[in-house]
Amino acid sequence: MEMFLMALCMSVFGLAVSAIAFSAATNGAPAAEPGKRKLQPTARQPLGEPRFFAVEAPRPAAPPRVPIEVLLLQLERHVRLEQAVAESFLHAPSTQALHSRTTSPLVH
Image (tube, rainbow, N blue to C red; front, side, top):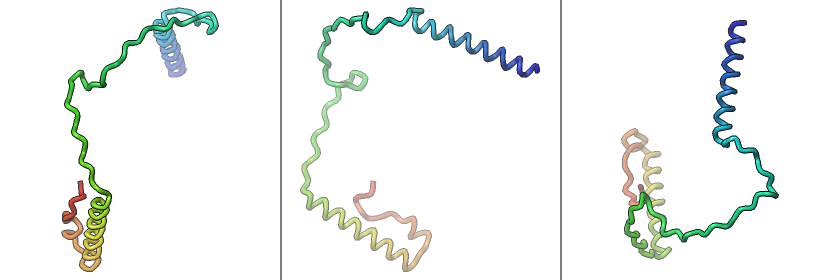
């Protein structure tokens, strides 16, 4: 019974604190009817370029345009290298071969 009364008192106290915080957040103003309140338009100033902590950084140069054929050749070479590594691991599996680095330039 004492546990129940303690939980009840804590719940009522929490409810009171929440009600006080809510009334302070709303400033105790009653809700206005939507039809009676009219908002006045405000003049907006144009925003400048977005900045990170107001530090103006130089714009990065555009990456050079690479033909799609070159990218496809690099991707095919990478796939061939990975297939060769997988085949060599299947022929002679070892933990050293499993954890060795690849020679492909496409690995990040």
